[in-house]
Every structure is written in C-alpha cells, then in structure tokens.
Image 1 (cartoon, helix red, strand yellow):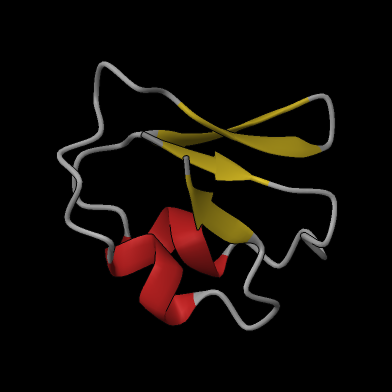
Image 2: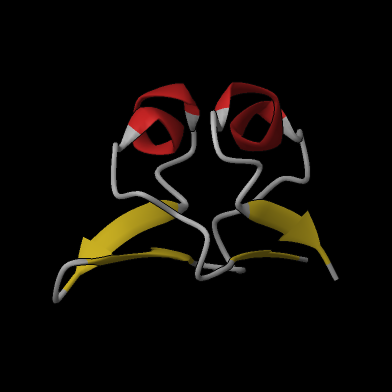
Length: 55
C-alpha cells in the first residue's frame, strides 16, 4: 500500500504514470485508491518530490 504525503507539490506526474487509475485528485490533493493499485511503483519512480511512500 502506498500513500501520497504532504511533500506533494500537486504536479500530477503520478496520475499520468499510473496505468490502473489508482491515483485521483480530490479537493486539490492526490490520493491513491488501494483497490486499484497493483503495487508496480511506477508512481514512486516519477514523483519529482519523492512524495509517494510505501506503507
């Protein structure tokens, strides 16, 4: 399971790299929907702020 932490700058790069649609924007913040996530870590690799962490 992954989480986007406060360090996120809202660039949206993770959304474009997520091929399962697990990352969504809600009220100006990005969230990872665990049921859609396949643990590929693509979002972590493309986050320029290292704001996605594995729990």
